Image 1 (cartoon, rainbow, N blue to C red):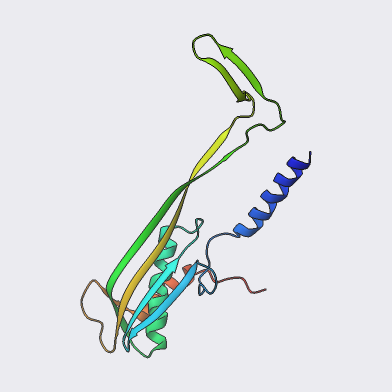
Image 2 (image 1 turned 90 degrees about the vertical axis):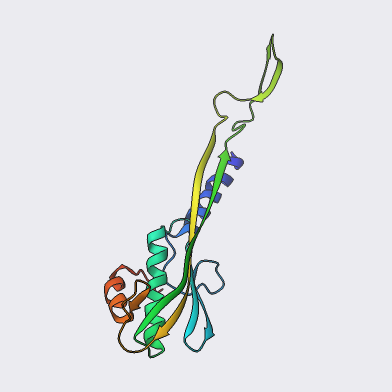
Length: 172
């Protein structure tokens, strides 16, 4: 009975920690969120790392939105992506509910011998795939007319178009 209560309590605590997709916010002490570093006066390295509940599209949207915000805050009009990449981390997470009630079965098979510690009712293994994305870019800021190039973005238009899709953290 104590074991069941412990498992239920642990599951409730973990469910409370999950909290949903990574919001648009600086990473801070967490490994998830925005990070940026100024490389030169007009060049920055930006990344957004999402948890396993944050899809790839959201991670890449937040990266472009931050690049546009940073461009405008620095007094520039457009940015160019000098380098851009999205990394995927996939792992398998599993759990086993072995020996739920402390009942164990041993049986003998004439061809294979003795089998032990098998519960035919509760030996379930649950495995699921967990994927996490991190988008990184190095941007170069510019003033004036936006160059006619596929890697050049008008910062004001990016903020206007992607802004409604950005989910900021809830304020307590």
